[in-house]
Length: 440
Image (cartoon, rainbow, N blue to C red; front, side):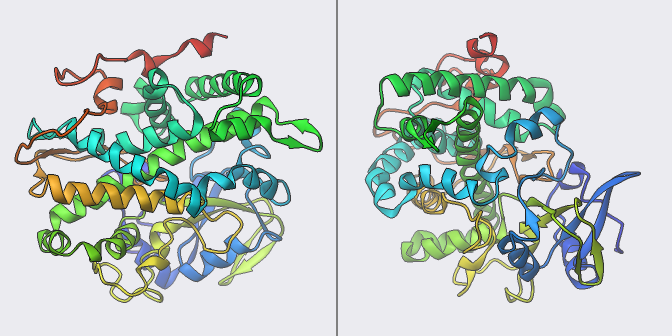
């Protein structure tokens, strides 16, 4: 393999797996490498851990007010999000927006919903355990959708839309998803839904984070409809997709390594660090973008002002300079927590939801190991065609049937995609193709 053999601007490169061998080559020979997207377009791939950290902490030279994904975004998406979305703003507005929702992600706030998370995991497993088989996407999607819907105050009858909107947002480069879910329409629906929800919360505040967002004032003025929409989109999609993806990737890894799974079944004290190692090994968000605000030279490469940089978290999490034998999974790895799954600790844009994600993952893996201990693959895994998220569309699994112990949860993937499954609730395919808010 040589430089240029793989173009990381092509989402098809990741359809089988993450090209870790090519990232290793880039880290060694070209840690700052130009990736063409066309004759006059492209981005700089940044692949070393230390460089990613340095760029994320350097808000003077690099901005988040730009396209944050490896493929070009439509102009309407850029206009709608830059300066309004938390992930596409710079200080000082970024700090203002971050403070609005910070209270929902403190240790105290997460401890208050810990019991609810465990109840939701029980419901998710109860929905499938008696059948002895399922698409693991259904189980993995349930908890994060319910948690983020609780936080936003989304009523039960609207929650399937969260799954559909998330698939539309993250699956825009996958032909299967793009044919079923219209990303532009999904964005319009989400923004309209957020606007109407904001109107209701301003008139009648509830004990949810969207009431806090709707009531927030900047220089005496309420947040705009665009601000509300960006908050809703970020919390509803990122809060759902990342945890769902890591549950799937983590269980895939444990099924491929039965000795490690057995160790975790025998000793739950290993689980917290194992989750960190699984996050390092299977970084769910492949990358994130920045733009150079001025000319910068890095490793001999001249990065011009206005050019895009893609920071490859999946490469940083396997950097040999930081992690010994990075392509091996070691659940007792001493520095596993230094992974880049949540970005750079101490940087402006470090993920706020880290504690929530860890709490959800700990509950999910604990109960799967307990109640579905012999889970095995039951068919081919379908990966998402994306060079932004390390996503999985389908993962059929089988296990020894057990007994449900409470109320079963909803199978969102089965519902939204209209699969023929008599064990599910009524199909709500309308959630995948449109909703009344898009007509307002």
